[in-house]
Length: 133
Image 1 (cartoon, rainbow, N blue to C red):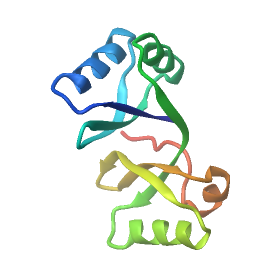
Image 2: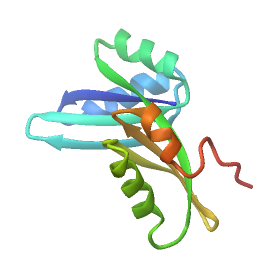
Image 3: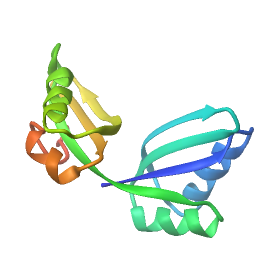
Image 4: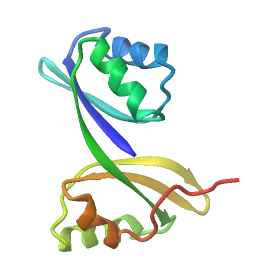
C-alpha cells in the first residue's frame, strides 16, 4: 500500500481539484486525512491504484511524496491501539500517520505510515487486509 502526501494552497477549491483529478483518473480514495495550516493545506491519502494516482497528480502539475504503508488488524477492545503504538515506540519506530480503513464489531483494520516499515512489521499483531463479510 502507498500513501501520498500532497501539499496544496489552503484555499477554497484546492481539495476539490485534487479529488477531481483522482476521480477523473479512475482512482478511488481508500483513506484520507486533510488539514490546513496557515496558507498550506496538507492531504495524506491512500488510494486504490498508486500508479494511476502518481500519473494523475503529476499530470495536474502537483507534487506528492510517497511512503510505504503497513496494514494491521486490532481487536475492538480498550488498550489494543495503545499496545500497538507502544510496541512500535519500543522498537524505535516513529508513526507518521495512522488511518482507520475498516471498523466492524470484530475489530479495526488500520493503515500505518512509519519512518521504518521493515523495523515496524514484526511489531504489528496481524498484517495485510482483513476479509469482511
